[in-house]
Length: 258
Image 1 (cartoon, rainbow, N blue to C red):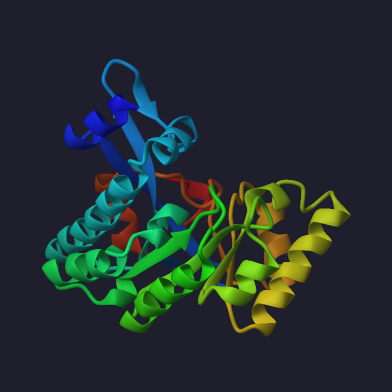
Image 2: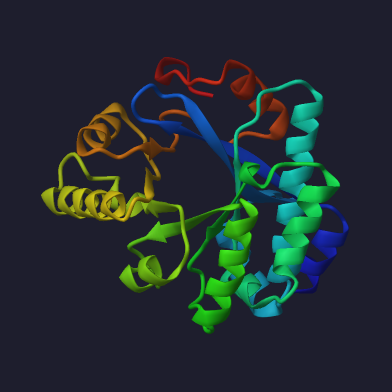
């Protein structure tokens, strides 16, 4: 656990960015900042290898604040390079929702880089149960009023369910990849996804499917009315330097995956 705190202070964490696309024209509509740990002598570490430890050690709030600041700084750097910008999504631990300084942290980062709040999206991840729903709704509502977009990540797994969809002031519902993998061959997955899309759209929410890895999945999601997708079929997570090309082209081609 001490290693995690040292990693933060030694600047060992970084983001790889994955594109989000609309299903109608495969137009780039956003990016998700995916956390990576550059472990000296061990290569690149992925969130499933260390996020649980961050939660247990209490470093998750500091790491989450680092993520917000880093995403804002990267947006400012892309803007300075003359690149067109799309919203960048950062994962938010439920522990951060109990941090009384969260709103001010986000506000300060946006002001520091002179960014419109609409360029930042916060994805509420269900790595832990929201203990104080009143507090969570209050801080997310303030952020939404500021202009920050809110997404409910991993919908349909863990603690993410109808109660959170009802209570939290979200703009977007992200359907977990576990329902997408066999959507073309498993009628139960197809029914679950179709029902989730219909529910989200009836609540006037954006819906995005994660983990799209082939054309069959994309075609199925398009036919079901899913508005946005992300996954390896369209774009693999890449360092900021590589994402410059994606932003410059502002489109994706399945024949030329990045």
